[in-house]
Picture 1 (spheres, rainbow, N blue to C red):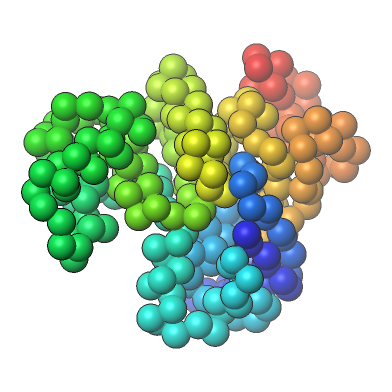
Picture 2: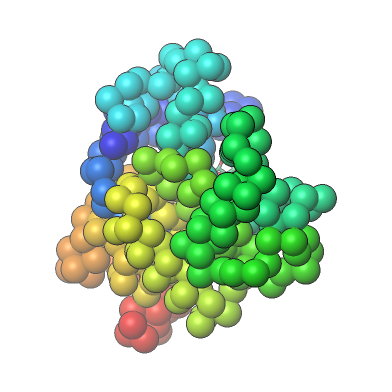
Length: 253
Ligand SMILES: Nc1ncnc2c1ncn2[C@@H]1O[C@H](COP(=O)(O)OP(=O)(O)OP(=O)(O)O)[C@@H](O)[C@H]1O
Ligand SMILES: [Mg+2]
């Protein structure tokens, strides 16, 4: 579904991504992890054409989008939905208006629109909140509405930027289950950026570890735990030896 070939990206004279090579298969749940500032969100932005690489190719569903026109990129952004860390809902619109934003130019009856909104909200486990405003919802509900808005476009792939950050552990688990469930039900490709190692191990088909703009590891959770690379080990133990944060996260899982 996605191939990055020798992708380099710089902004303001800083090299943020260095020679990234990555291939994400159709239908898989691909998790990207790495320390803050490693370049994870930048990769997501490249995958749906929000930014272009300085060099290299970004191939989405067989098309190199690094030189695509604005019009082609608009199409790509419909094919590849993005769920932002901050839910990014339109505060002055109701939940129903947020979810149906992608259909605003379609000629459908009010009843059909209401029906579609209801079905889409049901997919993310919400019902009866159509007329609420985003500010009236909890953080977890806002994230689900953000997810509903992304799936309303019927995308082929969904990109999630830290979908569980700021949520309590139970709500985080529900969101991770939802990501897995939607991946199967909608047969989409899912790319998830997260700091939650236990969660990543639970849902990922494969995990990539990004360090300082470079991919230092790609493989399954089991392969990651066995990987004998100093940087992978350092990441797993949070750089603090056996008691470190990420290590603790694994042993809890
Ligand atoms: N438009 C930009 N202009 C300048 N620097 C940028 C720009 N976008 C990103 N960066 C820098 O690129 C680096 C990677 O940013 P990115 O947001 O991809 O990191 P991240 O891995 O998602 O981090 P986090 O876990 O904190 O979200 C950071 O050092 C950031 O400051
Ligand atoms: Mg980020």
